[in-house]
Length: 340
Image (cartoon, rainbow, N blue to C red; front, side):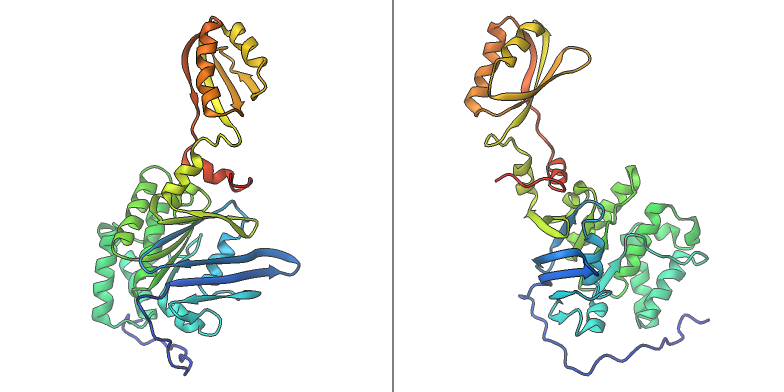
């Protein structure tokens, strides 16, 4: 079959397009609800994404991320609520939405037996691109995703990371306004993960609007301007990298985890710590050197604790709050309420 053979396409509805304004949000999700029978999968989800921004959605398996991405891609209909992509309702103007988005599912399907060049040519032709425009798009995208040297390699020989990058390129062939990526770093480690992160960052630098989901919070923190946490179908937290770092900082209103490495005088130290009412969950590691506890007092009380241990006869090599990473702090929100 010739790559230039026309492909029949369904007619766009006859309603005039909604004018596109650079000032309008790229994505608007308004009180979105999705039920499957009696099971509530998405519960009153609302957010907006501005043009050129990368919006991350982190959540545990089963939190509703994939259902949300499919709704954004107009592949499913909400039970109630509304999604608008650059002025187009995903239900009423589904065809217009699909022309303006690029969607990469969690498990992208590629056609083994085709080379990377042939596969992207096929996708471009299906999108209605002419031969010259299609070739320019293929050449550019293979370079952007780092597969130019693999252009004539059969897709079946690609590594998992290369397959994900080719799927990403296929979603960009028609220059979509919004890119929807369902867990694009899933199952990628080491160099393959770093390569994919760099590709996503480059797309962001080029001005792509992206909605990215991930099971690992660190994946969306790597590339997104704003990160939200989805738990049991509802958004429970939203913020940027600075807010995530603040979330990981010690919260003296509740408790902080403290580690003390005591080289000598452990018994005296444990006796002192065991008498205090402002700490709990006192633990000692197998080596008998590291002591862990949750401290519920204020910062001044914690600062005074080290001199007290020394006066009690302890030789202390380390004493301090164990800080969580922003990714770890966000992962805790998969199961816990955010501190106020």
